[in-house]
Image (cartoon, rainbow, N blue to C red; front, side, top):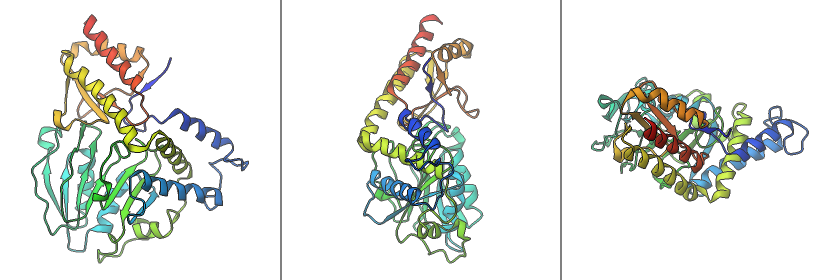
Length: 356
């Protein structure tokens, strides 16, 4: 039976990427060596890293616009620390928007470096919406936000106009929709949603942003070191970077972000229309802030849970359970999830309505 993977992450990747990556595990580009054992200093892998960094910028529309792309380790959680280390000045200030668990984690790390101002928070409402009315201090070293919230199913539709550097954690929706990415001074994203397997993080940094803090930064945490060493300051996660390159090439061949955005819009519309139409279900996120990557919803009557769970599991669906802080269900519809899989879920929801 075909599996339909709605896991929030690590998540589904294109089948052709799995095939190419598996072949490289046995023999990478005819070298007679596995991608798992090839030297990261070899000309073959140096070419992979160079192409991955360049393609990431190209897909984001940032090529030739004064940005650097680096692939690092430690996940987005490491960037919670690295961002204030590299951007918050000694005795400085940073502004944060609190929209969920991961935003809260970033705020916690920043507080160790200086005055961390939370400009707005939706925590009192269990993060079911994106705050709209807030002011960013003009003397802040940067403003940090999280574009998509996997746990609570919310997504920022608009980003504030501000004169301070704009930093965004795009871990769960990068490469999924068209944006003017040149508005951002620093973007970071764990690979394991729309880009590759867990193990690497893409960081995109605008030139001129760094070396202004007045603090001494350990080399491994210093963005400038990683830029200067072209993501080779220490041994990079070779397989994760290579698989990310394959996924970015898959996206490029589809037509880039504009093409996948149309698919993502169709998937989200199909599922949210059923959530709103079907009297047995209800969404958990404010309608205007619903995520196109992670749809969160509940049963109106928990007595139907066992029956519905059997329906979607028997249909080959995997990874649909909601996060414990929200409950219910969470359908993660990342780039590689086909529209067919969403239709299978919708059919299961309709079947529950018919037999319940």
